[in-house]
Length: 323
Image (cartoon, rainbow, N blue to C red; front, side, top):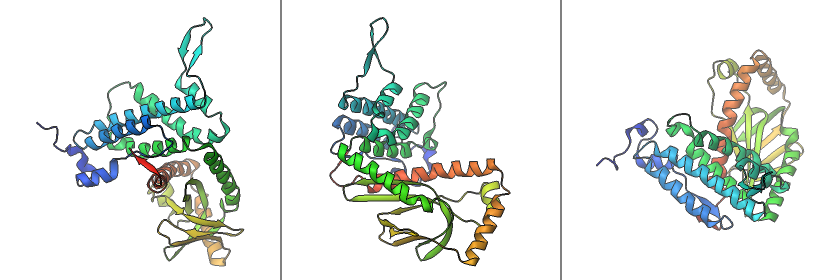
């Protein structure tokens, strides 16, 4: 009986069962407005993730389960919004609506539109999983854990109280406007007793739940190794900083990180900094657009997963249900 023997393929990614759990098992952390059917179903997905330690392909089954949960989620939300799940044909027959049509109807609601991109990502994954051309195991390379955290975050947002959701969307729009002066241009980042020159930020994400507030910035540090990074594809990990308390001023962003340590971003035009900035842009101008896009796409994807992990680990804490 080898059902409870660890699958040796995990040796490439983990050092022990505890390490495996920390890296790949995602629990369903949901607030009280999330329907119990979703909470219970996600518990099964968590068990599938956990037991894939003994049989590698089960992690793909966990992904299938999570995608089915997401389909159930959008249908439950549609019912809450009095959106019918069926429609009449020209022949007056009643048929089920396509999932894409239900998603479109749900996200026509103004306060939900900013969540549609995440659901479209999930829908594309679902189409691949539900219509395979052959048996193929993604295993650890399928980002099941990362997607599970993304789905937990999105489900929690989808079922937030309407007033809270509208307030969140309004806050995001306000922050986006206030961040515009810091989007590009030479700035200095001060954190962890270091000063780093940056060229603005690629993207931001703001999430808020009860007293938990998270402003995440994916920053673009100036590198003196442009050839290595962009042409030779020796990518460093994306620089994502998280503010839990912050103030956006005219020429600076100031606050504290997850550990309560100070962070500050401010404009700076010292001569030496301007020279570094000029040299960086001069070197970057010699890099092909293709290499730049490859770098941005690769690191942006990693940065987005980082942000979803940060939200998952730090946002859904108070008054939460653990699935």
